[in-house]
Structures are given as structure tokens and as C-alpha cells.
Length: 244
Image (cartoon, rainbow, N blue to C red; front, side, top):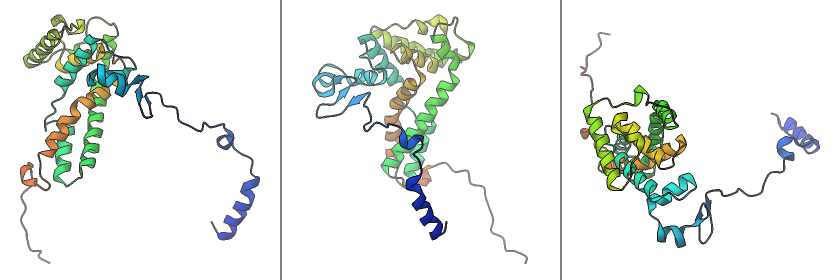
């Protein structure tokens, strides 16, 4: 646009009538719906410093944050067990692998955190996409769909340990009954559902939170530029003079 055209546009603009964006009565503040800021912040109306920190665990606080309601003792116990089972993500998992590779490439810690968080979020989305039938079954369908059944004895053993860990906390989840023969991840998602996380966005957040610490911890064990530790499959090559 030439200087003349710009000047003419500027002269006409004040006389132009307001459009829907300009004329809409926009609010002047953004409403806080989860965290109420201030000298004594609140979560869904509960004082963090005077109530939650004194009478409730971090597990209960996380569930309150995600659901809007304080969990029962049973729900809090089930959530803690599920997060513990979901916590270890080895370097064989994409989020941890990405964090390790970022560290080797010299990324700063904030970048490593961002990379692992994004990869964890994508992992959670993929897991929930793959278990759509499970979520529908948890809503009341019988019997469990074939795609969520255990595929090996090692999976069955893991689910058995999950039931034992829950039982020690006084928790029994009907969906985990041995007769249903759920696989490990379906059983853990069923446990999260029993804690009050009924929407997939809430479950995705729980999956991210559970795995974040182990992905960061694994990345921190690597030194920058320690590529000799990284498996490479580089093809052999030979330098050859050109005939030209």
C-alpha cells in the first residue's frame, strides 16, 4: 500500500461504522472459575492454605481441581493407587525417549519439560482414542468389549496386583472383577473412572500428571551431547574419488 493510499485509508477509517466486534459489550475482566486468586487463594471455593493444606492430601486436592468436588476417602485412595501404577514410563515410551533425546541435544530444562508434557498429552489422547469402547462400557454396557481384554498372563498378573493394592486401601471396583479379564491399561482407566474422572479430558490430565516426574527424572540422568549412549544405526559409507 502506498503512502497516499495509507493516508486516505486513515482518513476514512474514523467515519466507518463499528462492526460486530467493535460494538459488542465485551467484559472488562476474565472470570476465575477454578482458582480464585488473592492473598488466600481458593480452589473451587476451598481455601488452599487454611483448609486443603491442613486437612486434605495432594491427591485429594488434584481430584478436587479436576472434578470440582472433594473426593471420598475411597476415591482418593483409588486415585493414588492408579497414579502410582501409571507413574513409571521408561525410556521405551515416547515421552521419556523424547525428553532424553532433548537433553542430549542440549535443550534447556524448560524446553525438556515442554517437550515431555506435549508428548505425554499426545500419549494420553492416543490411549483414550484406543479405549473409546471401554469408556462406553464403563457407562453401563455389558459385557466388556473384546478389545479391552487382557492379552497376556503378565497383564493379568498386573491387574491382580492392582486389585490387591486397592483392596489394601479398602477399595473394590466392580469393573476390575477377575471375570471381566480387563487388560492393564483398561483396568487403570476403569480405576480413574471410579474416582470421579468421567470425562476423557480429566483422564488425559491424570495420565499426564502421573508420568511427568519419571520422564523428567530419566532425562536429567543424561549429559548434554552424550550421543555415544544413544543407539545409532548409521549405514556404512566409503569416500570415493570422482572419475570426472
